[in-house]
Image 1 (spheres, rainbow, N blue to C red):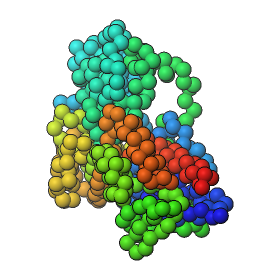
Image 2 (image 1 turned 180 degrees about the vertical axis):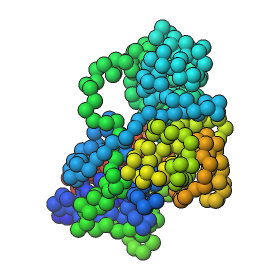
Image 3 (image 1 turned 60 degrees about the vertical axis):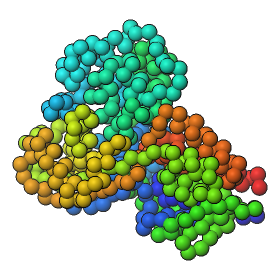
Image 4 (image 1 turned 30 degrees about the horizontal axis):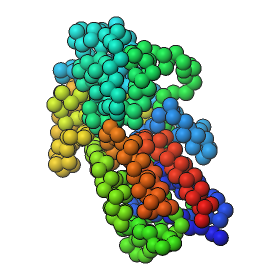
Length: 458
């Protein structure tokens, strides 16, 4: 008997899940995407004559699933690494280079930290006390900020860890689950009395890195999406097909669209959690829990300048802006330094981010106001004297899930509700078990495996 599976959502998680499901004999699968394109938060468009990413421009290699998918798709030969990895942080209006020995913003070497002048000498010494303080783990889920503040003090948390991890997650590290958002730090702290000692032990146990920390594509991350879509080109994939609801009838799940309904045996729901809550209104317990997962919005302005108009050397990958600086800007990627192929020798490209959890000022500005405000801030920091050659605004609304402490238990409860009330429906995506491209790929694969196992029980 042929089984019917519907995948809702054509981001990287949904595409990966669909690719795995549709190639199985005895399964008919359809992929439904509400927008006019696949890829979700991965989008590459032309800027100053070159393909430049509007969202993620690389993926982390510490988790294997990104590289594994690229290898399966024959893309491993196209992967490239950033030209530079050094970065800066703005402290009291002055750019200071991040010191050697940082692990996710946590200093493991005292002397480089002191020399950086990012924190005060007393704050650097306070961080060093981590080696001698007793184990003071509170015994329950804790935030990244809570972990760093109790082990290393407030300045390390606010000037190094929050600007880095908070920027990646568009969040406030005082409210982000340490085990889920920064597992490397949480593991080091749990296995050792000292966080620094734990991180050094991790580094010692790890083999010499053969692979760069980040990898991307010369043609942008859109190349991954394009290749994924081409790999399922003969299957039933549909864009411009918004789903309005998912319900369970006696023997089947039903996926409702604006045009029709599809009866099926299983559904993989690969949408943001707040959208999933709306689609699962008929399952109120799961919907309520899904709605409780908060999301943050980010606006990114890509700016092109004449290189001669920027006095700063741009000798790094970019700069982080701590909350305490009071700026709208949260981070600036020096795109054409990081990826030299993004621009010719006469131009420079910056990607300027604004917006994070608790800061929605960027949402209140129209595009022109946003560009003007960010340009003023960035020009002051980098000593830019000329006008913009080109700009574009990319808005990612409610695109960054915030993993509050206890998030894993919340997801477990949601999955329990679905098994009870919507058997055959499986979740995948950044809102649940890990953000970032590799984590979403893994969730797509896991949801496909769970779906195929479920179909065997019917």
